[in-house]
Length: 499
Image 1 (cartoon, one colour):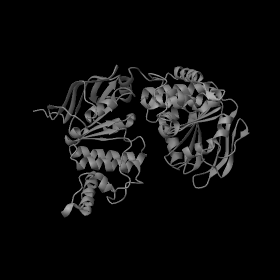
Image 2 (cartoon, rainbow, N blue to C red):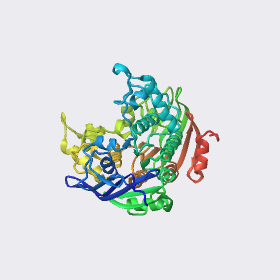
Image 3 (spheres, helix red, strand yellow):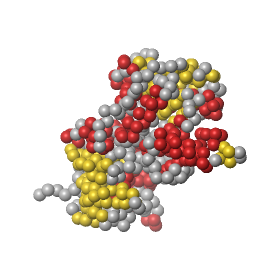
């Protein structure tokens, strides 16, 4: 007799007004199996997760639990059925302990209603032992890394007898070691009979962790197949409906004059004696492991952080330290790693975000011209193939890839000589990655000097004319494109070669 899936969706549809988010999508999650949900931004993954979690009610189709149709009236119903969601950014109570967060609302009590802290801590410790990790149940949640916060959320789910664990982009903010630890936890969960739904834009993680893959495109089901039966190329083709042989469309350009010169830049305790140049029409990648100092160097160059020694020049013009306004005036632009916190005002409109870097040019007398602002935004929206309903919509309604395009538009509108992009494709789908890569290649072809910071090694090797590798705050190697390989870059990043 065939065992039914623990949780399933049968021909589920969901619309929001005139927008069709899901159309007759089916999905089956089995005990002891990690199942990947793949698709571009806007494919319907988030809507599907919210239906499984009881946040949205489907317009059509059924949710099926242990072979029986169920109807959930809210997240509490889903939680009681054993469905738990682990989001990319956990939401713990920072002033409570790890154990108190795990058992929030369900803490063991002594006589007269007093909380039994000893039992609470002991039960939390048992959960961490079950997961195969070491974490102090009594320590405050404040100060925990994102990876440890996720473990607390997973332990909280297990304490509530979760049978289905949904993990939505859980590795986006984790280091390599933290990802490996999370994967070992997922393996332990599977061995205990938990069904895991894993959502990630990182294809290598899908093939490492998952046994089956369901692919969505434009809100519709495309395929559900064993991961072992697919290649990365197959998966990409199903996700975007086309081949992506041009994922890294680097144009051959002849570098021009030196646009950015960094000489012996030092910030005590962070990075030391960093020197390099970037020429017009050139893409230079700054690679290295997490914590090597790459982002810190970019922030110092742009003037966000003060440096202690060294010089920065743009087209020969020396920049003062700690002055972003001087950097912008000289032709520098910085697209930060965290677009939501540092690159955008999320509640502000698309057109207003794009106009923020050019308010002086948009001014007509004492006020900002709404017409000029809108024309500027519309021009860049067309040029970057931005997908939106209205330019007056808040930027927080856009997908991650389109938010990244708004950040790029904001800075490209300043017509920079040098563009610094920090993790330009983090958290966006493979189709949008190809669009961002195309854009960077076109910008280099127009003579802009590009300094690209990336932890995505295929992106570094596919896009860069030269690779600068940092290790523990120092420039460890400079590798020309023809000599750059995964082995040569990682060797320098781990300190096994000298500059």
